[in-house]
Length: 475
Image (cartoon, rainbow, N blue to C red):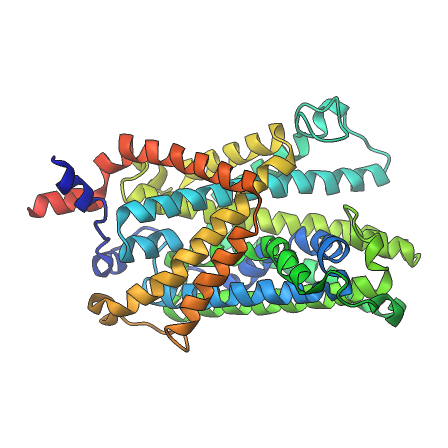
């Protein structure tokens, strides 16, 4: 194949009309409620118990809730774009599938590979946090693990740590749960999400009686720039909602229910973040909140230690739901990429009884647990934000090209982004602005990850692409 022909076939697009009506083998069992609990399960995790305090202390002061509002605005604009895509193209794979349909295979692979890192490293980071909280609960009962099994090698303050055993165990348990089928996983996730929300409401109800107005002065000691910087950190707490769109092929009436799940979960999660942030900075002066467990610290500060234990349990439950949703989202993303031939087809094989891609679920779980167990948490969180922001930016600008393509205007779409094309373009710009706020190390790591992905694509994916095989057969 000559170079000009090869470069032109790099941007072959998926035949979405054919794929929408093709039977995929995935079971349609999820409702709008299932999707909202999935979204809240992913968004409201460890972040709600940690990030409000850190943002208040280091970036915004008492106005921490404004950082969450700004991050939510950026996410909501991206969520509107996701909602239009998901109602037009109700297929597994989320942003990867949407971009494949609009911009072609090469851009889709880059995006899909970036999203694999988001899901994989999110699972690892959350599992490491889960381990820390779980060990705190064990310590309350005077149960302690050997130093070597408490955390990954190189973890700050733990010179004898080698392997994070609790992180490994929880990822294996969640992987086993997902193997049982999506309906069962969604039911357990919903129960845990309800318990988690009850714990957050308990903190708000108890803490509101100890709020001191003097703690809100000065309101924005770091100025408006602090809100933007704080929003870049707060954004990490919101990245889970895109996992909802990976479930599109397993949803009853996806054109209607996926947009409801995306937007509903984002609104509910934002309300919880704002309420908790306001109560937290009202209880304790913002300068004292730069701690690993600000919510528990605030409860100790007002001598409500009995609630602190419940909050720690809520954090463990919360992080378990995050693991369920991210592991689920990651496996469905790998399933979609494998089905397109860009990854080995063993990853798109479904169990005939449970309709679950078993091989890629176990592989994703094992890789996630490996990173969580042997790499310190501060190193594995770096790739998460940039991969997500890149996906959000591409989906946002993708709406402009979706509307301009007459082929997609013939498809049914239950949701349209309002104020087109202004909102998609604004969403794209805001995502790029937040990307530029990230550290240089994050960008370097991102490009290294992309180079690895490009090597794999040109050595395997390009030659095995299902879209390219169909294209060559038609010529």
